[in-house]
Structures are given as C-alpha cells and as structure tokens.
Length: 114
Length: 112
Image 1 (tube, each protein chain N blue to C red):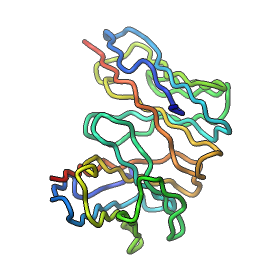
Image 2 (cartoon, one colour):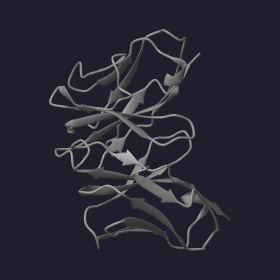
Image 3 (cartoon, rainbow over the protein chains, first blue to last red):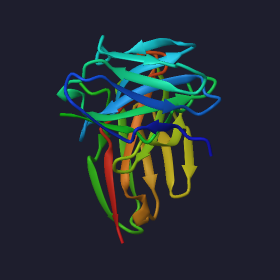
C-alpha cells in the first residue's frame, strides 16, 4: 500500500541552525501539506502546496520557513534559523487528485532544537 | 474559542465494553469531517471521511456518524489494540481550500 515517507525520523539541531525536513508523498498525489505537533498539543496546519506553489500558509509559517518540491518525488520543509520553540513533530501529508479528499500523513520527523 | 472540541479527553474501557467518542464543531460550511487514529510517536492514520449530516461509515469495530453540529466515533467491543489517540479534524469553507483543523484528541485505553 502506498504511503508517505519522511526523513530523518529524528533531527537534533542547535538554535540558529538551518534544517531541512524531507518527505516523499504518495506518487500520484497532487496536494501536499506540512503540519506540526508540539508535544502534548494538537496537530497544527503550517502550509499547503499545489501546482508548485503555496496555496495557503498559517501564521506560524513565517519568513523562517520555506517549502520546495525540487523534483517529481520530494517535498521539503526548510527552517532557516531554528528556535527552541520549533521543537515539535513535523508531519508531511498528501492528497490525491482533489484537495477535498482525505489527507494521508507520514510518520513524522521529531525536531529537537537545543 | 476552539473550532473543534473532542470529548472526553481520555477514556479507559475494559475489553468488550462499547462506548462513543464525541467531536463537536462550530465552523460553518463544513466540507468534510475526518477521523484519524494516532499511536504514540507516529503520524495520524486515516480512518473515515464524512461529508454530510446523516452519513455513517464503518470499519471493523468502528462506526462514525455525523450530525450538523457533531460527530461520534462508536467503538463496539473494543480490543486492547484499539488503544490510541483518536483525532477529529474538519475542513470548512471559511478556511483555506484544503487545510485540516484538528481537535485535541481523545486518548483511548482498552484494558484486557
């Protein structure tokens, strides 16, 4: 069964460093998303991406964040200068041919900023 | 004010003891209500989508229903492997086209 994959599973970085989280969405999906979940809190939307551009971003997704689909399979989230409060689980998700369908989530990357 | 509220926050059941989880929403223009299961340290796993009041979906011991203000996830004769956090999320016309807004979840523990 097709699934969303994410690497790395755990990333530890120092405050102020840049990190890139990687995702491989399900192969025929067209809509891509990043969410995050701070420990003990709810899953929060960060950004949606379709047709090689951002469809919407939340207020969390400030100038320190960027997304890219560098090739036909990868979807990345970059945090330019990490802060302690960026520590969270980051989930990539994808949807098929319509954005109204269910989103399938990857296993997540645990980002720890020290 | 939360747009999606789940109750209870935690529920402990004995194996075989049926119960229901609640998800109430205050958004207008609902374009889909989604149930996910999340195991510790893992990503949400899709269970059901409901689009209109009166709709019901079933999968094994789980059944999801939808009204104009809330959804229920009924668990019949649960087993220990049903232990997880169950998340409810909505998509609505007032938000973006496609983002999901999640509730805080219900942590279900099923004891053998």
